[in-house]
Image (cartoon, rainbow, N blue to C red; front, side, top):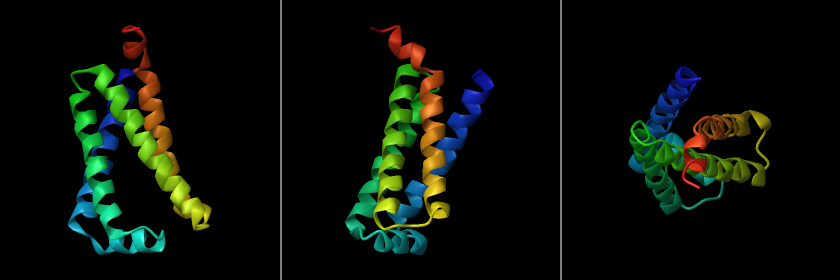
Length: 121
């Protein structure tokens, strides 16, 4: 299970790093996506920084499982917001699925390492 968790962690780090940077940098695709969702452009930048904080947490998670679980849950919450935003504008399932899959992967990662949190209780 450790290899699966490590692969998930690296996948989420890379996916969210590049997504965050493109949001912050104002990539045309991101600007258009947020406009389509009816969200202001300042929210695009804020979302980029918020997701980048999750990436930092996932990286620190290599050394601290509790931080990893919290970061994975943080990422899952961000993706829940993305799923709900797409549903709000009645996007087709094909546009909702990438965010939904990333949310599920983040939840799986949190679940795999959740025993580290329960040991603290």
